[in-house]
Image (cartoon, rainbow, N blue to C red; front, side):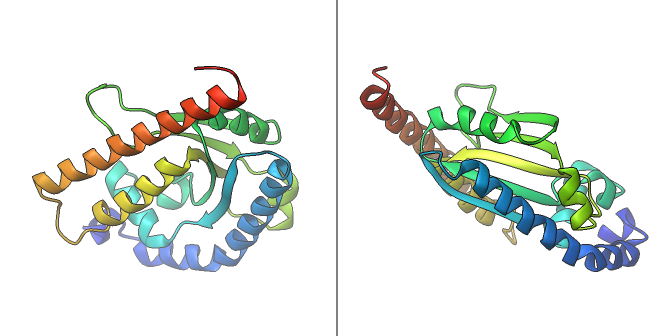
Length: 203
């Protein structure tokens, strides 16, 4: 299936492997920039910047129907900022975006109120010119995610059990994961409500 979708697969793999050192350099520079921006901001739990593995790039390209993965996959470099509470997401995102040029915004929300799943804010940003030049970056964009602790924990476990599963999940297993997503949503709502009540005087 992969060979059918990418008849030039060996060329794609060789190109990506050769560019990996520059990508790692970009990731390190971005991580430092994000730490500098958020150094004094409260309720930031962690900042991580990663380079997407070639397996993940090919998997995403198959899922999305891409035929030129090294051009079409915009999150080859991804930054994730994890904050404590829902109320921290928007101001933290805006503090970061004040320092980067935005290309595209993607809000991951479930339109059906009866369904629970991943929620978060994703942004596609241009690499700062000085980082692009210093690292000789082969890519122009990076993905920024700003999510809560509970969404981060749920997404990591769900991805490991779902996308990485050797066999498709059974019906009851999917129901259990959906139940866990509902618990993460509820925990986010409760902790945010308490924090807002105690620190902002809001309910």
